Length: 429
Image (tube, rainbow, N blue to C red):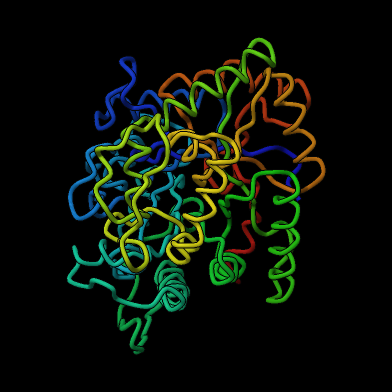
């Protein structure tokens, strides 16, 4: 078990977590924004900078969802630019196994690993929504449970290609006859990250991942997740400390506990603007609700027949069925607590846990997590850029260092070294 706490930042680029409409928010698509964030993280001795992936702009009821930033540049291209301007920070690209080809993606990721001097990582995702597939002439391609079957075969093929082997695969989910084309980097191959939390996702992580990124952030959930994952690692013969566990987390710091709580409430309301709250309910009602006041009561009309409209494709799988029962439960909750539309959405929309308090309080909590072995660190989801990142680097990192759970300097140059991953595992994993 790694004794030091590891940190990454997940730059999603779209969605409600980032308060990108704030006047002082950095330009979302400008390379200077990404460069400033990466350099700040490097100053804070972070392990890695993650970029999310978006293969199609988000939609709501069949039209472009104007409340999210529309589109983002290719992650590998952006990270290659950052590699030339940084020296230590790991550079992790979210890349899809359903709508890519193993030989092509393995070559591009290996190229990033080579030009960065062994700092590349691959965040493996499967993307389960049909609306993304339509951009690849594969709308609805592969049932959800088969995506992990393809992903496992895809990653196994990529690892073989990185070893320079010829790979022949002829199945309905993956057809391949190729040989590796890029020499290994100083770390051997890109570090593999995996973010799925379903049984199939956990199996994929246990078999292939070096790092897992989960939504199990509260102490109890994190402990249960760690126990489950380590059981899966034992079952396939991998060491229980072979995979670093970095759940996603938001951080809100204040000079006092009361100040941080007030700031956290403000952030949550800013993330859930009136238009966002209406758009969220429209996914469930399947109807235009723009005439309703977000600070008024829930819509007094019945939802459309059938389950959720999948066109926007942003909700967890478990939210896409059982619509009628969920809405009935929301009506009861809103009546019981006298909640407006916006208040209800704040209360029920899924999200990662937030660590709120003074820098010392958050550092104490994180120290307990890592010393108890329930996590190896956290993957931060900033709400404000560059503000949140600067706050963590300048105020929280020194508190962690004072407690002896965070590095005071980089001791290696590769991402694999930052994460304290056993290099011998490359020969068998």
